Length: 321
Ligand SMILES: [Zn+2]
Image 1 (spheres, protein in one colour):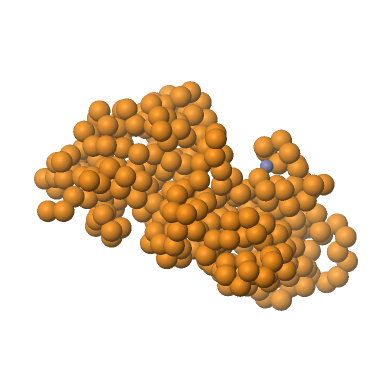
Image 2: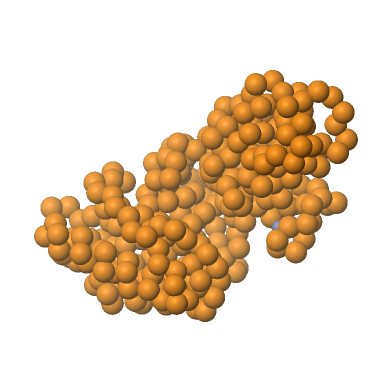
């Protein structure tokens, strides 16, 4: 039997697992709830227990695996295999994840942050078509990203490379949780889209269902904004156009710097699909110089929430003989 790899996508509510072949085909999937009680000290023991239980159930042994890879929130030291500052897991203190999982399972282990592993997943088996140069942007509650350049995931000196959410798109823009202003995240995350809508609504005087909802204090989501825009709400279209201008500006500068074969957009907000992609691409073309404009493509993510386990599992391939 060929050796397998295991991918783990650890999140604040669930930990997703998959067993894959070394060429990235998922053979089994399962998940457990993430128990964040007691400073998250049960999380790793429960992951170990779940893996060992699964292996027992299917008569598999540690030797049947090349390795385990995991994506996690927080600041990751992928060399040391540690995580700190993952607040949605209650991990404030340094966690020795690699050491615990290798001791608990007898299988080699590799780790990176969740946005980076999603980038690896989309690059390997999704829209990135396994090209050596791919940028991934995820638009969700926040905005994250990962950069694969010349076939390598970029980490930077402190592991902060690929933090696309903090690219400045407006020096006088909204305050960001990171302490500076005008970050991409403040205008293109799910809450960012609504923030842009509220801001532009102050000056919009025309007829619009979206404007009326905001004025009436109704709850508005980014999904509402995109749906109303798709239904030709004039103010909705204006908001989407502005969000896509910011995204196109950030993508344009990523393109001008890195010239990847594709910039892949994923995450909840990207459910708006081609309606979003085509508008980002329009601005991307405005903000790029000819060689980049003609060679770098703006694409939608293809793997959905499987990108995490697939990309995480790919980390384990470094242990292949
Ligand atoms: Zn920021």
